[in-house]
Length: 337
Image (cartoon, rainbow, N blue to C red; front, side):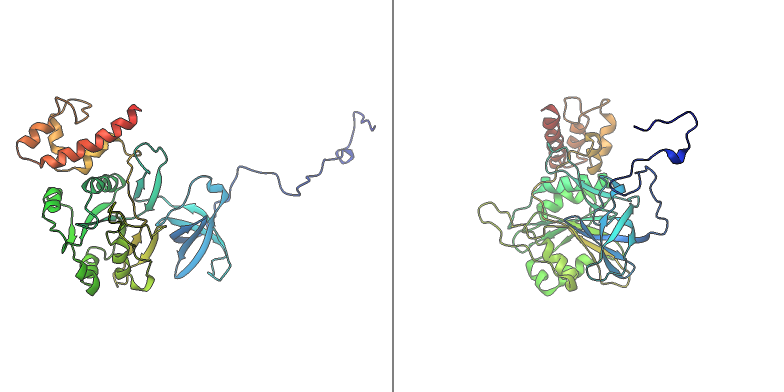
């Protein structure tokens, strides 16, 4: 065994080699200031299809981003092979700050928040007036998510030849939400798409709606060069459609003023676990002024709530107050479990 004296030379000391042959890890990460800017168009099993200038580039998320995931609509910084050639793979190293976020949970008991779309400035809520029957509470939940995430809502009512839109329009008329009413025939001749297009030009619009309402059919008509499989059969017993859109996809709107259409998978529920209950009232601007007389920390579903008098005086539709309280009651059940 070799022993060292008091005056040993560093060169005499044997260092243990790194078996893996790599450099020691460091917390310092490169800034990637030369990263190209891109937009995420779709995400599929860890691979992100992005638009970089006029090229389609497939990329993966860099390890240094940790758990932070990029979603459709995100503006990202990309390095690596940006040629867009077949079998090439770039790397997303930065996700830029988002101007808006559409989020949802599977239901109100699910704490896992899913970011559906980033940086959209409009949410088109597509619902059929019949086959399947409209679901006003799902519309309300989408409105809550839109207002909470910084998106302006647009209501698209389909199949008005099967049922009149009067009841729904009366319910949402006081909200001042822009709307388009279409028939099945207008879907065939393209008139429905043209009327909806007027609200989309120059904007990034995410489309949501439960299966069978004609959402993807409408997207196909708006962007015919990028057709997606249309929604399938509507079950006669449940009134539900078959999910045929399985991932969100951003498509460019063919217009000289630009615009993007983002098709999202059909939803059967829209959980609001991520939304603070005190912010839900913001989705009901026809009711919000009536809360000025409410006691502090009012739940808007108690005996002294000023909203009862506000509605009784004719300032808002009682159905809107019912819808608000049903939403709040759902969240209260979650919190009490």
